[in-house]
Image (cartoon, rainbow, N blue to C red; front, side):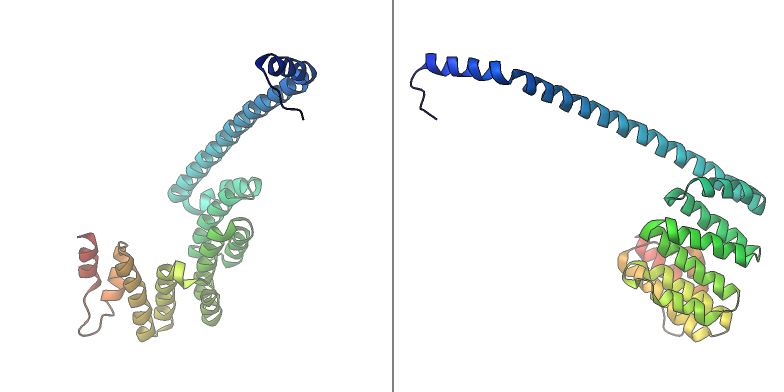
Amino acid sequence: MDVLTDDHEREEAVKKWWKEYWKPITLGVVIALGGLLGFRQYQSYQLSLLQDQALKLYNIQKDLRHDGVNAIDKANEFITANQDIYGSLLALDVASLQINAGKYDDAIESVNFAKKNGGNLVSTQATILEARLYAQKKEIDKAISLLDGVDKEVYGLEVYETLGDIYLAKGDKDSAHDNYKKAIDIAYEKKIGINPILQMKFDNLIKEGEKPAFKLSQEIAQ
């Protein structure tokens, strides 16, 4: 391209270029703006849907807490219609009720749904609940095997407390104590509040020279 040596030549070149290309440039700007507005409208629509799902989930969870197994049919309708993280979270709530009611086969179905549709976070929680389920069925080895596959660097507190419960139900108090202590050590190290039930379970098995869990909990709070 030749070098433009004066203002007049530059002005004429710009006019000529604009005459040739104004239409595609204008069309491109319109399309870009339309796409941006459309994307924002789509985002707003998606957010509205997610908020609606979350509200429905909350209301059904409230019904489950209030009505127990009598609300399971309503919960299952939501689960069937929402094969995603929302349905999976509700499936875990349903599974907990089914386990407590001794409906183990139904609970297995609910847990499997959560593992399949809930992503990594829900899948791990589902595996921990599944271990409790098999412990209730007295299939202790299978329960322990399931927990062996869970990442203890991330979920150690939940895993060790669950293992403590399993060993305690088995009658192995030493192993129960050791696992409860691991859970408490993790909570103390990470400055996570130790839930009162875990405190009570450990303190009932405490050994000589160990600091009670309720005192450790007080130290964390301070």
